[in-house]
Amino acid sequence: MDQPSILELVRAVQAFIENKAMPELKGHTAFHARVAANALGIVARELDLGPKATAAEKEQLVALLGHDGSVEELNRELCLRIRSGKIGIDSEALRRHLELSTLDKVAIDQPNYSGLKIAKAR
Image 1: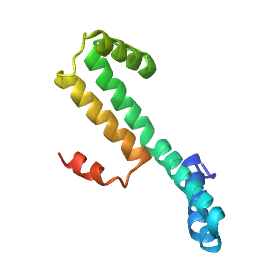
Image 2: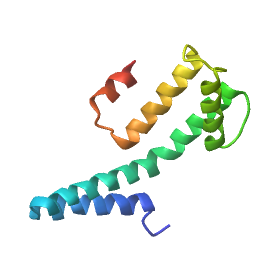
Image 3: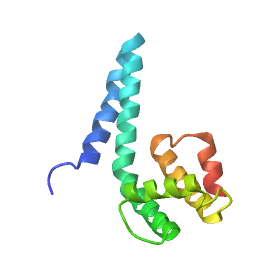
């Protein structure tokens, strides 16, 4: 394929904003450029890490609930089971699922969060 991927395009725009545009901007315009660059970083990480994270989340939900479905359907059912008391907060499987899916989401949204490295090391 001779054209850049969506991920490559997003990273190129992010690099332009960070390396070329931002050094020349001041005040609110610089702030908004930083917000735009951060948003593009999230998009790039979602494109890069999101499919694997979603697949892992689905696998965990299927194991926890005992049947297949879409991630959205399985999450709705999990919420209903927690609300009804069918799955309790003392469930090790639930705790592990919430921990792993949260780590994946933080890795996409806030990869420099100080607690992420500590949590992943455990």
